[in-house]
Each structure stands twice: as structure tokens, then as C-alpha cells.
Image 1 (cartoon, one colour):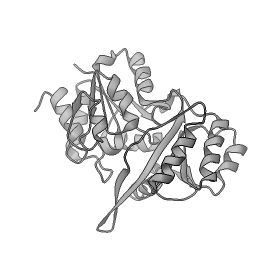
Image 2: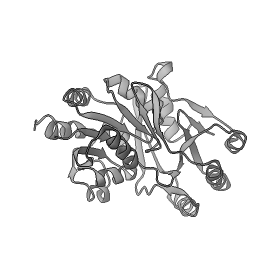
Image 3: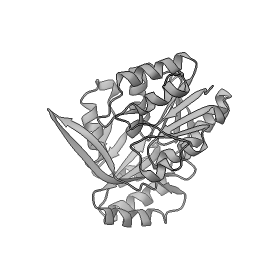
Length: 293
């Protein structure tokens, strides 16, 4: 029997509106009641992931920053940390500033940005539905470069870079790949999120990538947890939809890609489930954990 399910959030566990359905909540809790560890593994900051875990009643551990941080939900202790060094962060910022491209810095707890747009706009809208203590803290900062230079305690887990223009974006990707000691996420398709303004659903679509320290990925964090919990990696199900999920999908005992993922990602999975708007994660839990078709 599988002993752990590690699942991505956006585009996987969450539907296009950033919600977890009641069916999915029920399936997750039933799997947890059977002794299966449910681990949310996301690029989000830990506070955001904790909100979803607490909403459902998930216990155990979460992985944030695409594998930069593992947090024990019971003790609220960070038991594994692997962040970017200051000089590397400044190099990435310099490239973004010189090319007037949007970027966000993710610390272990919050986000720093110059403007609310793209992914931070989605989080900003999500915050409106949350109580104050569960909001993602988005810090507006006019001079992020100065902030990093003067700070000695900001730990950066990743930097996200966004732009609507594909040609501009591809040019920046090439420059980022020349920086030593970083991993630049290879995203082949645009991000798509939907926000609700009144009764109107508005689509946010843009090109994006994520830059993190070399060696940081979701699978490394999952392996750390597996060793800690004495779980064989063959007894782990990993579920995702995007480039930052592929390494855990390919290494898991059962690697699952969502139906809404790009075709090239589906080819690298053991199983392709329904989309995030069609209970894809619930179907996997029913099939492989609860023995329900």
C-alpha cells in the first residue's frame, strides 16, 4: 500500500478558481485516516500552504518554495531549509531590472514585489477571502535591490519572473541560464489562473519561470521526508501538472500528471488523471488508496 501522497497545489489539487472541492477534501481525509501521509508540495510560501492544510485538517508536513523548505505542521518547525545566497539573488535582480521585467522574491514566509500583477494579483485576490492570520503577506517594495543589499536575514527560497511577451520572456530565460549556481525552471506553456471580480470570472494568463538554488526541487525534499519517516520511495505517489513537478513525478513509486498538463509532461508520467477541474486528485486517491473506481 502507498504510504505517502505528495501533491502540488496550483493546477493540481486546486481548481482553476484556486479552490479545493468538497469531494477532494473528503478523499484526502479518508486517505489520511488510513495512515497515508498527505504532503502538499508547492512553490507557494509556507503560510499559504498551511492555510490549505488547516482548512482541510491535514497533519504532518508541507513542502514550500519548490522544495526549499520542509515544515512540521505540528511543531511549526522548519526541519529542512535550502535557500539562495545573497550574491546570486542580486545577480538575478540585476538582470530583471536591466530588462524591465516583472519579478517577485519569495522568502520563507512572504513575498516581495514592486507591483501587484500576474501571480501576485492572483494571491492578492485570494487574500480577500481569507482571515488576516491566513493571508499571504505581499510586501510592496520600490527598491528590492537595495532591500536585499542592506538585509542580512532575508532568506530567499525562489524568484519568480513573469511577462506577457513571449519573445521578451525567452530572452530573459537565456540570460538567467548564464548565472552559476541556480536552477531555471523550464516552463513551456503559459500560466493560467482565474479570478472572480463580483460575478465576473477574469482569466490571468502570462509566461513565467522560477529561479531557485541549484539542487533545490520537490523530490529532494520528499526524499528527506521519506528518510525521516522510514518510507520507501516506491511507496510514494506524486501528483503534479507543471515543470516543477516533473522530477517528483518521474522518481515516485507512482508518478501522476494532471489532465490539464502540457502533452510533453504527460508522456513522462506513469498515469494521467483527470484535470484539476474534474477531480483528478480525488480519482487517484479513490483508485489507489481507497480502492474505489
